[in-house]
Structure formats: structure tokens, C-alpha cells
Length: 290
Image (tube, rainbow, N blue to C red; front, top):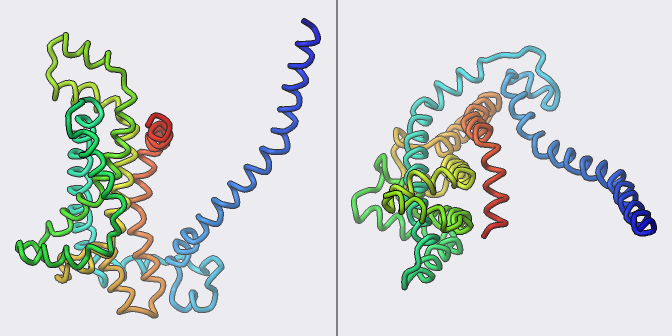
């Protein structure tokens, strides 16, 4: 037995030696990657506190004097209050409806067997292959014909339609891994189908739900193409569209532009940090269990 133990000990020692030089390299690469991605955001935030003269003289250094004038200017000039209200209404409504519809559809596709199951699932997943820009003109004509063009709810419908496929894909892959015994026990206790869905399946799907929530929220918050084509009224514009117009009108006021972009970034960061742990669990579980 001793030679076998010695051999296993040697293997463990060799693995530890490999990890000793691999770990520093991995961490170094990850740190560099994080810095490369974080630097543009940090640069934007720092320049938002500079005056126009300070920005012109020193674009890559710290401001000589921190000022909040750019934030007040951007809020008033770009009408950010209205833009934030419009974006929050559209994003929250579209995200909530997408996740709700996607969760119900995923529940039936993953937990029930019926004749058109595979066809319906394939039909939804096929939507992930359709490029958004190829549908802009048909979507414009459709919205104009049904009288929904340039209204507060115009953007909700395309946002739901184009994010249902990825939502159903992630949730279905996650729900398929649940054992059937859970539902059988609940049904024996007198629970109906929808009671099982609300009380058992949804709580168990929390990591996957967090993942699709943040994916939908980020996409809807930053979406520009549909907003540009379907919205013309300045009072109905979303934040990305309004900031683009603001940047075009005030091309020399870089400080105000940076301040507006910084304020638009805050809700995404806050939402992501709030759901960070569940997002990581959902992404890993959905990738492995599918």
C-alpha cells in the first residue's frame, strides 16, 4: 500500500506546484481584463466633474476642482427627468411581462409532455436567430397600421417579443432539471397546476429568474434602434435616444455629456449589484443543467 500512497502524494504535490504558477497568471489576466473594461467608465465619471476648460486642458487626469455643475446642466438641458420616467416605465413593464410570460411558457414546455411540445419550443428558440435590424421597417409599418406608433406603450411590444426566446431558453433549461417527485408530492397534497407553479417552481427558479431579469433590464434600458424608429415625440423618448439627441446638440459640452451618461449608468449598476449572486448561480446552473 505504501507505493500507492507515495504515488498519490506525488501527484497531489505536482498539482499543487502547477497551481502555484498557474493561479498568479490567471489572476493577472483577470485583473488586466477588469481594468481594461472599468477604465472607460472611470474616465467618464472623472470627466463628468470637470469644467469645459479643465477637460480641454487635461482629459486624462483628475479634475483641478470637482464641480456638480455638469450634472445640473445635463438634467435640465437634456430633460433627464422625463427621459428617466419614460425609460423606467417601459423597461419595468416590458421586463416584468417578458419574465412572467416566459416563466409560464417555460413551465409548461419543461414540465409537461404534449404533442406540439418540441415544435413550440423550437419556434420560440428560432426567434434568437432573427436579427433585430431586419424587422425595423416591418415593425414600423405594423405599429402605424394598428395605431400604436409614437405612444407610451409602443416599445413594450417589440421588447417583449425579441426577449422572450432567450428568456424561455434559460428558464426551460433550468426547470427541466427539477425532479418530478416535487410536483407529485404537491399534487397529492391538493395543489393545482398553477399553485405548484407559483409556490414551488418559481421559488426554485430564483437564480435563473435573476439572470433573465438582468438580461432583459440591461437590453431594454440601453435599446436604441426601436426607440429611434418608433418614437418621434420628445416627451416620449427613452434615455438612450434623449442622450443621443443631447450629445448632438451640445457637441462641445463634454462634461455635461459625461454627467448624463454617468447618471444613466447608475440604475443598471444598482440593479446588477442587487442580483449579482443569483445571476452567477443562474448562468452556471442554466449552462450545466440544460
